[in-house]
Length: 339
Image 1 (cartoon, rainbow, N blue to C red):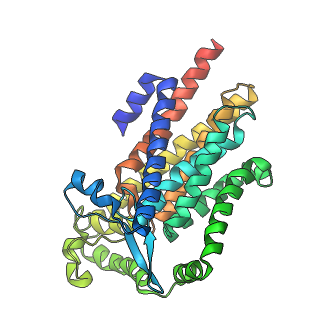
Image 2: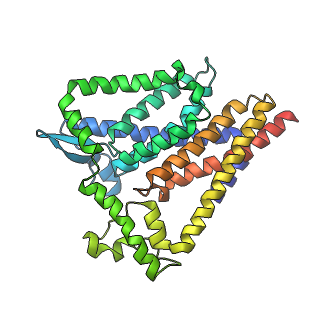
Image 3: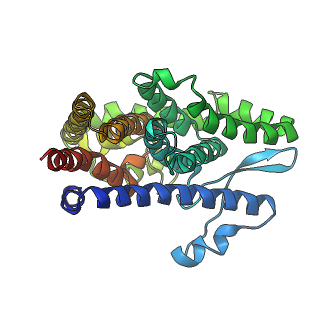
């Protein structure tokens, strides 16, 4: 992470935008593969067998959630291996692109592209049926609703939202019973999946009693709890449970301070945006949306990770590198412009 931030800072603002674009387009391409995976599955073909499996050497296929009257319910997982991982990853570009899109000039060449990207990602987010992804998206949206509340009724926001929900409305209308059954199954909270997600929190007191300082050791949850879960590769399904159980109070405190530091850096980025706006610097229209978007995306990802573990994946640290490098890059760019 330190190396990535240093590299971005040394390469400057233009390179930063290219890196941001590549990261965002990568997540969008992943989501697009999920759509192709879904279409292929509904046609009776396993797309992963021709694309993912030859590269990884392992078996791979789209997630099958269940069936409604003999018709399989598919949840796209794309290149992530799990539809919930895909759903949580998607909220990062969604929450970062949204404020940028809202602040773009009316005739900006990227405005339509960002609107289409946001609408597309919303569709894929809902198709993953990920409750953790929706939770994170909701938390991030509430964060953005504070500084961008005057956009809530604007046509600018309604275009991508309306387009996405129009596409989904057509799909639901064509198979209403199918979607009704799937929706009801995802909003219930008393199933085995929900119990498993909450049950892992019961492991925390025992571990803190026996190994309070450093926990059981990194990546050892499945080893110690295989006799309970019945699986040798079953994670705790919560980043915070994994953090406490595997690294103890010391590891949890260290990561907590790390998060506090990140939020402090993001606060500095938001203050930079305010200062640029007060000085009537045009950079403010880019810095403030980015700062708020990164803040919302981080809080949304943290909320989602109450039941999943994407904060230990590589994409999360690429996201953090972009978030942390933003303030020094744009503050130096603004200083050069003034001088």
